[in-house]
Amino acid sequence: MHELSLCRSLVRIMEDEAARHGFRQVRTAYLDLGALSCVESAALRFAFESCARGTCAEGAELVIAVQSARAWCWDCAGEIAVTAYGGDCPACGGGKVQLLDGQEMRLRELEVE
Ligand SMILES: [Zn+2]
Image (cartoon, rainbow, N blue to C red; front, side):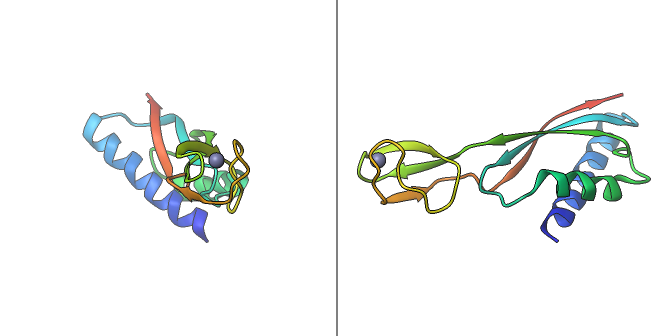
């Protein structure tokens, strides 16, 4: 499961941070999720709960912000925002659209104690 492996690395990052900065508990984790990451936030929360058990991340709240993806439209010769795969350019309706990002998940900030 995609979400499970994401959460494993997420918890690993938090434990590294805890070791480095000497905190014991993550209260809130702020995540940026690309609109095209194919990650479902409910599944992500569920997987996180099981991965975090017994670590500094146990009981932490996940705040997930979905970021629209950026793409390049060759007809407009400009950058556009897209929220789905295979969509046409919202500005000109053209189909020559190349994705630039939107598939990643990033840990933006941690609130700790
Ligand atoms: Zn366009």
